Length: 160
Image 1 (cartoon, rainbow, N blue to C red):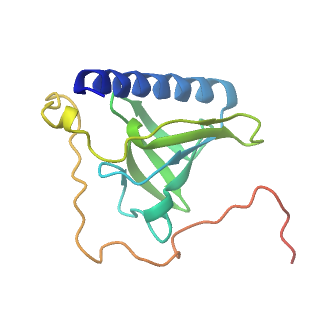
Image 2 (image 1 turned 120 degrees about the horizontal axis):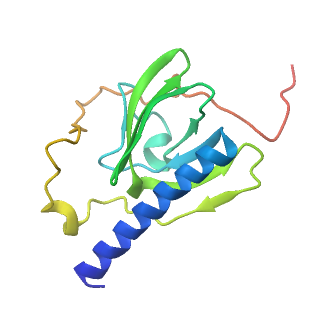
């Protein structure tokens, strides 16, 4: 595939993912987004922990709470999401959005992801008005344990 057609595919897919995000936001209220690890994915100070470094994480978006300052751009989503009692700034590149689904999991949409930064876009400069994000992390800054991860099982009731 030549660079021009790859660039067009990436741009079309980003637009499609953004339109789906809007559709889920308007139609379902609360919905889930699965983001896979990506060099430009930023999950506040929390970062990716445990298995999330390999499989990514599922984020909850809801206009009723847990989401604020939502801003959708051509290349990424910016929002402040609530993790437990802490609010974290997240930057989610459209290229790492794998799937959307609603609470009942009746609508599940899987999409192609581009986890490596494409050579096609390395020369493209970001506009001066957009927020710049540094994704560099110091070694040992994120924990390898699962102490910051809330596990949710939608399929069964827990025994007490």
